Length: 113
Image (cartoon, rainbow, N blue to C red; front, side, top):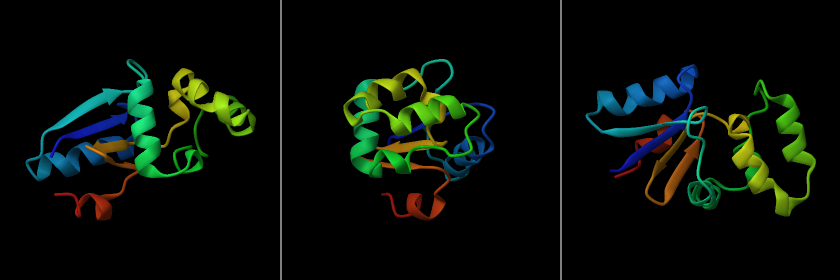
């Protein structure tokens, strides 16, 4: 298993996800969205795996202006805006190869081999 966790150090759900995998002896690569963000290729992979963009947006984000901007802009411009405002993504985003989840989803992670 090759687990990547995208989130922020202040996110409680991100910390819980890290703990979930570490308790099971699974190594994780943590990517801080505030420091590094998410690359265009990683975002595309997550969008393919986790479903429509709306599933990835965090309605409780502190960046409500960025969230509003992304929700109501033209579809073809949303990906670029997400790269500029990664804090509107639901945390954590957990990737395992071609699989991905948004939010704390231990029931789904259990099924990953």
